[in-house]
Length: 382
Image (cartoon, rainbow, N blue to C red):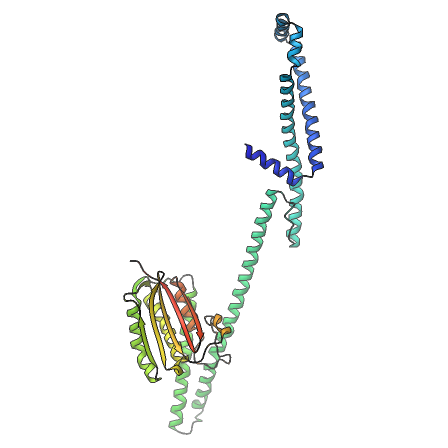
């Protein structure tokens, strides 16, 4: 009760000017005086009309005398009681008048908010009453949410347009080459069987690149779909990495690249989709071989750190510019701005999607001739 009274006093002080408070207090006092005076006169008339009450008053005067009766009516306690009564009734009137004032203020501020919403303009919140302030905050949150949704829709639309543009470019390039070489073959414009075989091999290579691009695009869109669910298998990351290294040793040897394995722990277990995790590290291994062949070495390491399995794939050679690092995992992004590299531009985007689907994260660093991709996956406690 005390807290509510303090809140009432604070709100009155915040929402009303001192002159308004003074006028409201005087009006409340006058109203309470008139109300009590009217009630008093009504009670006197009731007493005068009542035989029982008149008889009781006459007996009191006969017993104690009129002087004592008059003294009782004008005693300090009776005066204080009257004053407290007037004060209590004045407070009731003050609350009532304040409620009327607040309703009027509420209507005015609602009109201001409505105008601000229609004109898409911010409102000054200092003069708002708490209820309207909460409403204004809710409206602002709704407005911010709506703006965020619009921004997301615009980003999604832009991403769709970029996807169409990039896919069209990457599909058209090998397809144009395939059609060009096939036209030579179809029109018998080759000189001999050797040149025919050369054209056939070129067409086959371009068709393989086209097939890989379509597969990568399909995998990426599938991983980004909310309907795609990963399996939950128990995986030993050290065993999986060793298996991948054995599969890539021949490709590395052909490029005169040595793979160095460094495992700080054994039985580094995570729960995940084995096929997707395998695809993740295949992309990182292929990326390391493609861009780090000049360094002649690839480092593979695994350790446990703060409940996470930390796997690093490092290659040596030309550094990735610092400005390109944050965009490495964007789809179709290539450090080679001329897009002359053989990759599809989706490998690292697929790797990021796989890691995030497993509750982990993947980062990249490139300094002092060493480029490292770090994968963190939650360790299983089972």
